[in-house]
Image 1 (cartoon, rainbow, N blue to C red):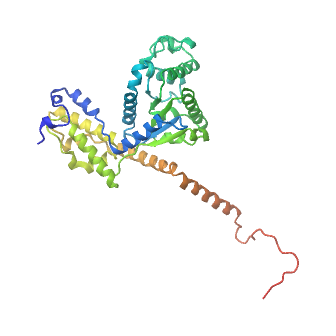
Image 2 (image 1 turned 45 degrees about the horizontal axis):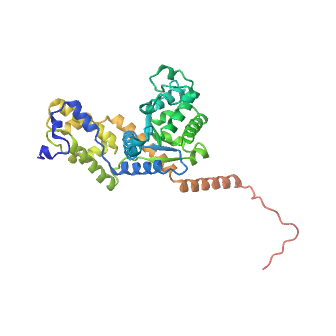
Image 3 (image 1 turned 30 degrees about the horizontal axis):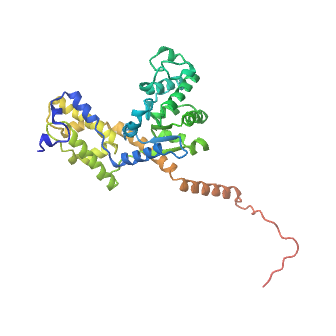
Length: 374
């Protein structure tokens, strides 16, 4: 048995209430390989953007997109801290969670209010003086009464004044849940316009539905890029090994009297979490809650089984993941896709010009006498 003092969590945590122990475990972020790759890619593009203003971060449900967003925010703030101490109004990054449109109608006013609320910790009563909007905080009734056009201008000025480097939108698929491709294109042009005018990178985190936005127009395609946070697959040995490391890390941080042996269930955990670290974390958190409620010393197999996602839920998540992964593969293989389209186009052309059975090929008939040489 591993000594309590040598465990990966503070031993005093075992004396805390269930809520504190659950909160501790939920806060654990495992810097696994696919998270690190997506994080490095995103940070590079935020710190040194090259003609790009919008990024789409996509992945299956429960893969860890929100974790990626929070980790990105933390590192950006830490890197800017020395500068922020000398420049009080500077804010490196801000984030909101997009909400679904009510009755299918997107509310720009609500979006601006939520965005400004995310910037409110650094708002001052001298901000936005040229648009006569003092006390610019979401909670001021006078602020909510502004017209959407005014709120947009306030938001743009706020992003500029705070030298905002990145604005992140979680659950961003809600922004494009509108009817018709033309309206979706309008949404992307609107968002790209704010990003361009404020010189603030906009990062949209969401489901594979965001891939619909990437090819709406040449301008959107040119000024945006995609980042994929992928899940782990049991068919790939490298993925299995990395997921084992994730399980081991979670196991060591479970605040229980005895460290559980999750490694003996690694295949079960990988399969039933659909290879998504976020799902695994939520699953283990629920198992921990049950074990604590029972006064158990550790997590047992029955705790895992009673808190696993139902078959119907797993099937739905997996189907959406597989469908999205196919779309990702198709969109990120441009050379093969273009060649395929050219071949299809060529075949269609041949089919349209091929004669029907019994019909002569179009050609010029000879005129006069034809000489035959032997």
